[in-house]
Length: 417
Image (cartoon, rainbow, N blue to C red):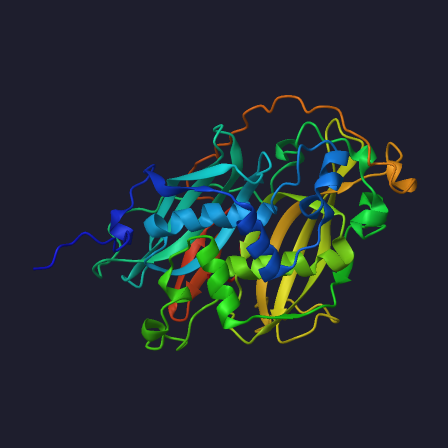
């Protein structure tokens, strides 16, 4: 006698506009999580690596990598949102709030902000805003993503689309930095890079030079670390019958590898503060070697801060192709087949005003002033009707038109999640 107690995941028909999804189970971050993440990706940013460095700029401890927090929240959302997904199509309007430290407990909640049935009668696109909160109910990460989800039964579109109006980029006024940051203690010798905010120019391109080969065991271990249960990353028996005949690499794995590789050229990008847009342009598999390059899209002056500036960056990752010639899109506006990630994000960088104590090595090893109490920071995104532009989204023969803001960077082809 069988009993239907297992979770088969939601299909497109199960989602309703403005539906709230509370995701089990909460996750307490441990030093082991940080060590495994470090072993898998090798990020070298000083604030996340050195407790004393973090204290010297006013933080109580070394925070975990911003993307580790993002992945933990993302992993929480998979069973309810994307267990039956064909592809994760894109990201937008992502905000990083209070830093996460070892010992913090993260919970996640999502709200459906858009729905669109596809003309193939087999799938639909679900837009969700997901928010991660710590044990104090403070926002740690908040972002929009949209996924192509299978229908339970094939049927022609029966409802009008409801689509969110998403910004092209997170504005400077919405970028969040810990209020206790005091960048006068930022040590350039220990950070590993002499280049500050003023060192970069809008339009500048940087080849990050280094490459990293993806191993089968590593990408599965990383995805399990986030408790991400998406079948396409694990079940080779099932995936052998699919389009590619093998397991896909979780798109977030590529984002973390690219971020780690970008240290060589962007080493003082000490905090990720926004995800403006993201596209997984082509699939990635174990055995591929990743390279990446970045472009400075914009230099952002922050309100009321003269010791921190922000850089809006586009980091492009490729598989099995170096980035010396900055591969991106062809004349037809389609991605180079070796491009696997087009990631638009914003990072905070130290600025030399006022002068940094790092001009005097080790001078920052002084006891910082005690941090003021944290204030709760929450963010809710605007919802709206369909704006007057389209993005082509889909995987293989599953292609459809999805309206987006006319100036949105995702008004371009998107495929594999």
